[in-house]
Length: 50
Image (cartoon, rainbow, N blue to C red; front, side, top):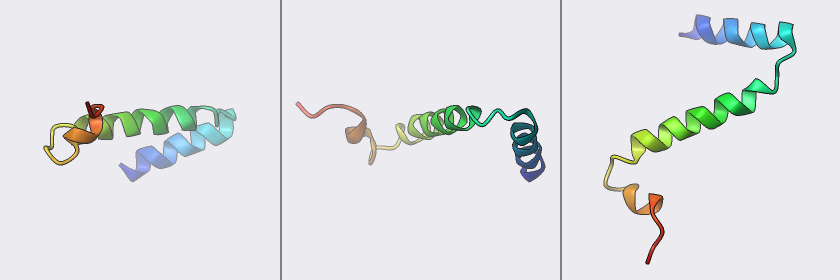
């Protein structure tokens, strides 16, 4: 996994595609929210309080 991350960072540096970093971070945060949404502790935080 670390090899893939290293290759990805090298790709970003060589291609000067640093604009992809925020996109990847947002996608990872969205994935984390979806994973943690199934737990009962964080579920109330996902929906507005009525």
